[in-house]
Length: 260
Image (cartoon, rainbow, N blue to C red; front, side, top):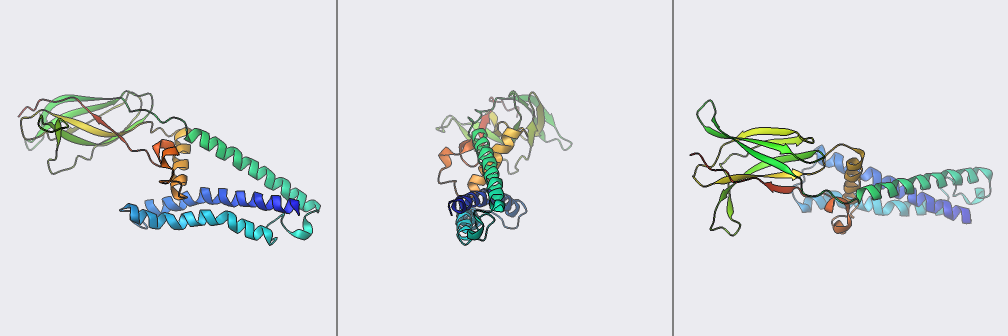
């Protein structure tokens, strides 16, 4: 009977581990295949709660099945048989592997996150397009040791009366430039400058350490898993990447004199 209870506990661990791994895949498929469109935190909850309930219920399902002897190694009449001992060894090995993998994953995921990325934003001068519209040429260089993702350039105009010292400028058209930059790599683009004479600058949203290595893969998997099973946002301060998903850094360039 004691071995039956131990095997039942092993099955509870296995059921919980399997759902912890499968649920993030299900969540990703639902979201990224656009089966539904997540537009708000409320709609996100409608997706997550069924997945969370499955995760919470999985070990209890294993407990129920184990107590009824419906799982291998938990049949009351076969506890002392050789076959059950073999099953117990297999279950023990599986649980040891699960504990080892989850310990490794937690250790990697909770490594200190990277600091603010170091990038160079260089104004290359003004030019005109085929229609005569003035454009500013900008180059962005990655000065970090790891890959970064930089996107969403936004124009800010110098405004001494504003408490921030600047105000946002929108020309009516979003600049869609973005780039994944390896160490030392540069990317360039053009953008229409502001129509007034005030000095202006560009700010970018930047994700640090975007390399496709094993460390970042593990961090991403752990983050999505924690989000899917309900550990985020409840315990977001204790999760990797500063929460289930780290927000990008806002990086600003130097002031540029308008040539208009």
